[in-house]
Each structure stands twice: as C-alpha cells, then as structure tokens.
Length: 323
Length: 274
Image 1 (cartoon, rainbow over the protein chains, first blue to last red):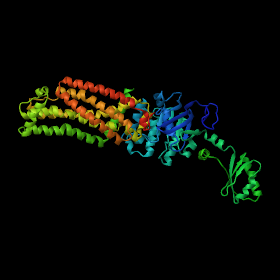
Image 2 (image 1 turned 90 degrees about the horizontal axis):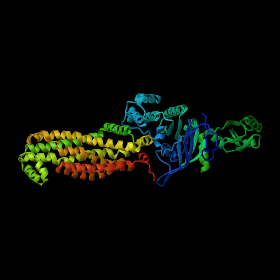
Image 3 (image 1 turned 180 degrees about the vertical axis):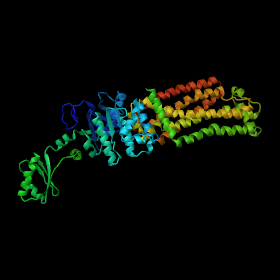
Image 4 (image 1 turned 60 degrees about the vertical axis):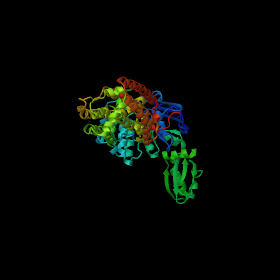
C-alpha cells in the first residue's frame, strides 16, 4: 500500500511527495484537562486509505487525539482537519464519516447485540438492513439476539467493530481494539482491521503493543507526553535510526572479534564482554569475507545473524534518546 | 436538532429500563402503595366504620378548608363528607410525589450512568447533537414517572368512585381541578425537576453523587409542587391554570439552560472546556 506524507509529519521526519490525499491532520494541537496537559504539541498527518498507528505509553495522549479527530473534544490551540473539515464546527458531518471503537467497547449490556447495532444505525441515519452482514463479517451473527451483558470480551469487541462499520465510514478510529483479548482473537481482529484498510478506508489505531503495530502500520506515530516524537513508515524510521547494515556475530572467544576492526566494509563494531558483537557494515555481501578473516585469525565463529530492527527496537531507541 | 434521534435515544433508554427489573419492581410497589393500597384502606375504613370519633373530628376539620372547597364537598353524613374530602384533597400530593420520585431516580443516573458504563464515549462520537441526547434522556426519565402516575391515577379514580361514590350520589372523580392538576400542573413540575436533575447528572462524577444531588433537588421541588398542587385543588380551576402556566415557563427556562450545559466532554467524563 502506497503511503507518503504530504508534509513534515513530526520531529525528524522528512517531507515527501504526495501520493494519497490527507484524510486527517492535526497540526500543533494542544489540549489540557484543568491543570493537566493531555496534548502538548501534537501533529499527525494520516493519508487516505492507510493504517496509521499511534504508539505510546498510557497517558501519552492517544485517546485524546482520537477524541479531537471526531470533534468530541476541541483543541485549545492548533488545528484539526478531517476530510478538510473542522470537527469543532462541522462535528456532525465529520462524525458521520467516522467509525469509532473506544478502549472500552462502549456497548449497552442490557440490550441485545442486534439492538446495540440498531441503535447505532438509527443515530447514524442508516437502515437496519446492513446489521446482518456486519455481524456476519465479524463472526457475531449467531449471538445477535442475546443480551450483550452475557458476551465475552472478544464477542464485545467484535460487536463494537461491527457497529463501527455499520454506516460504511471512510475513517475508522480504533483505540486499543485488542485490549483484553486472547492472542487468537487479537490476530483475528487485526486481520479484520487490515481487511478494512484494504477496502480503502483510512484507519487510525491506538495501541501500546508494539508487536501489534509491527505488521499492521503503514505509518507509525510515536507519542509521548502529548507530543509526537517521531512519525513515518516503520521501514523508513528504522532506516533512519539504523542506516547501516547490522550483523550480530558471536564467537567462542569474543575478544577475537576485534580482528574485524578496520577491515573493508566494516563501519563500526560494538564488542560486548558477553553475547554477540554488533557489527555495522556498508553491505551485507561483506559477511563471507569477514567470516574468512575471523577463521584465518583462529577465531571460531558460532553465529552470524543479520539484525533487522523491529518497531520495538525503534520505540525503545527513540524513547532512550529522549531520556 | 433531530426529533428522530431524540425518539431513538429515549426509546433505547426506556428499553434498557424495561430490562432493569431491580429498578422498576420497587417503583411499581411505590406507585401501588400510594395510589392503591393507602387510599383503599383509608377510604374503606372511613366509609364502613363511619361513626367513630376520629371521623367526626376529621369532619369538623373540614371547616378549615377554603369556602369554595367546602362548598364542593358532597355527601350528607360525616363519613361521606370526610371520605369525599380525603379522596379529592388529601391525596393530591401523591400525584406529585410518585412521578417525581420515579423520574428523578431515572434521571439522576442518565448521563453519569452512560459515563460509568463507557457508553458515553459512543454517544460523544456519534452524530447525535447534544440537544438530541439531552432531550432524549429527559423524555426517557419523564415518561416512566408520568406513565406510573397516569396508570395510578386511573386505578385511584376507580377505587375512589367504587368506595366513596355510592355514599355521595354516584361517580364523581376526577373532579375538574384534578384534570387540570394531572394534565397541566404535574407535567411542568416534572419537566422542571428533571431539567435540573439531568443537568446535574452531566456534571457529577458518580451515580451515587447523582442520586444525592437528585434527592437535594427533588425535595424542595416536591414541597413546592405539593403546596401548589394542593392550592390548585382548593382554589378555582383558574388557579390551577395559572400555577401550571408559571410552572411551564419555569420548565422551559430550566430545559433551555440544561440543554446548554451539555457537552461532549461531560459525556466522556473529562474536565470541560475552560
């Protein structure tokens, strides 16, 4: 899926050419609750038809950002635009085009699954005709007549997801949708979110689970204390933090790995007293020559492994640098 | 504002209330006690044991009623006149106390309950206007109380006419003043009280606090409604119209203020805009 931001999204990100129109943009948004700041200076830019994952610890401002996007809350400073509209003034028009799943499923326990969906359909001004299909899609059709109070957490999440797409929204806002789910249900929910993005919907998802974001995100925005720390495609971001090829090399005698210093293609080496050395190379093709060097020097190599930084590595690297 | 959404919100709230047996069970008992049990026992006692000393004393106390009210009392015996007076004048507050109690109990948790269940988030993100939500909630709080009153009033009328009617020359209830009370005076008092209660429901942090506030708000409202409704019954029908008109003006003012006080931040349970 193509994704490029149209404007400098956040600290450290580089401007790029426009590929998709921007569905959601928050520009230097600030919002507090009484004395407590929730968003300090948040800028997000989510292109249409992509999945943007807001990553951050609890209290980073992810939920407040979602509430700003639908106009449920207004910014004290900065601008929010959704499909070019200001949610503070065009709230109804914006909210009609949004489907939201909150951190809690926000369902009416005393009503049946069907009644929950019918309530939403009525408020969004659509007929009940789509209820069956939405429930079927999210695997909850068989339980529609039961009271939601008797649903499991996974069933509630599925019903909330079905409710979020009932009015065929262009923008989906999911706030920790896999919270409280077992691994199997989480994977199923993430697959469904992927499917919806493939249909051309824009998805903004909040999570603090890095693994979840890893396979899902077209764009990641790392939030901390109400500020966007970094944003961009996961692969771009990891390249930015780790521009060189990295290989982990282990040997029976780690001191012997020092023989790699200064060899062609070796940009740097980080020798640790225990565990493998981290070797930065200009190209992965140098590895066989380097292994030859070590063997020639009498060092017994036990492991050679290319290092592919994960989102988790990136997240902690970013947070580590800030701290 | 969309009336369709107002109706949808009210209907959904009422549907949930209908599922809450733990709530409406006690409310039905409350209505039954005030509208059926107490009047039935009292009126049967008076009409069937008519010569006791207490009845004579109550009968003498009727002299304290305004002349217009005294003139309206029917019956020739002490017990007949006493039971007529009790049926028409004494139970007027019941028509106010029961709906107010039920309505404030529902209204108190209407917004804060959404917040506590997390469903306030759903409403806050929905396209429903704040006025739609406020009015929908208000109607859903008002209807159970008023419906109980209407049903209770029907049963009460039946009891009064069956028990007292034969002693005073036939069916006589409701009197014109009671019609005015039920149709014109009680609804605005209910609306005004609920406007205040729902407004506070949006502001407080928990259902428990909401119930406390509802008690504080509804008590003076019950006293005012009690005195005004009794006055409406004692006076001419015109007095009832005048009291009702004033109550409607106050209710409309309360509703408009309540509507303005609703924010999405309050549905979400976060501190409001400065």
